[in-house]
Length: 448
Ligand code: GLN
Image (tube, helix red, strand yellow):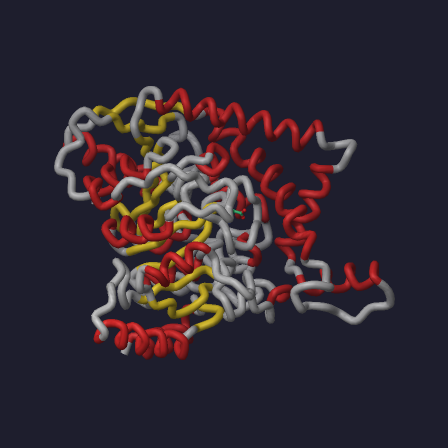
């Protein structure tokens, strides 16, 4: 059965932190009974789904890949989980991830790393590595991840599946444990575009519990698929990165995708994003840790269970945070508190906010010329386990092409275009205008 398939593969992959076999079984019985009563079947009726472990499900522990939340059982479900359940989905497990979604390889999980199903000596990407690997390995046709700087698109590219980060504000963050609130967005992974579109439809229902979730009407995303022609449509080709250290096979993948768009009648325009490619990374690694240091202050050894015996309150904070957080989370908190310090705020945090504005404007200009932008999803193919563990800056480079879309709040999708000589998936990325998910899906369905 499906659950046996997962159990057998989990010994190698470690894509799930908390399997939900029992819950899935009883849910399936429940749905079966509802079916025989002739009740309404939702668009995901009976479909197995894996959910990243920073998204809450009432009564099921949510660890965020951290010792700190090892035993935390949330008393409520995330908006997206409620949407999935209303649509008839069967949630079969909570996916492994880098601790608090900080990382690009799922090696920073307190529950051990997830491996890449295509090559077990390589990483699946991160931080939603468990969600991407689950779909690639056939645990479930769809899964949910979160993307703050690339955590859906980078693992999707590394695992050869579709991954979409929606426009900031399209999907409610209610029930998503916050990393960097102005950048976080929940999105789907799938093995084909129609599944991806259906999940997007289901989870993008407006929600008042996230003040940044927009009320506007969502289009029918399936309407954008199965287009034959891109006539009258402009695809922006990101130039200027060729001289950078990008894997040759990835460059070729982008060229291949571009040619397909051109053959389908699209007009190809050259687009330059010099500020985003040059300053996106430092800007992100100032703003994201700043927000994280504030968001993670609540994990203090008093609430949420994890606590270490201590002399007094100060000692309790120090010891609990010292033992509860892993190395990457500590690094981010330190960077965050550093850039927010009263004597450094102007020089770092404020400066980064200004750069962010410039990046937003740069994209605005690009989208006055193009409907959608085509670029690499990652600078490299899936790297080997352990390869980037000792040098954080090297690991941060993995997000070079994904981070700008988060800073500008734009939607982005990554997909497999072909395979490398070594049999690894090669991904490309499409970035759209705000709420331009439809344009992205349309272009992707032509490239597919
Ligand atoms: N890899 C990036 C980071 O470590 C992005 C993470 C994410 O999108 N959650 O911050």
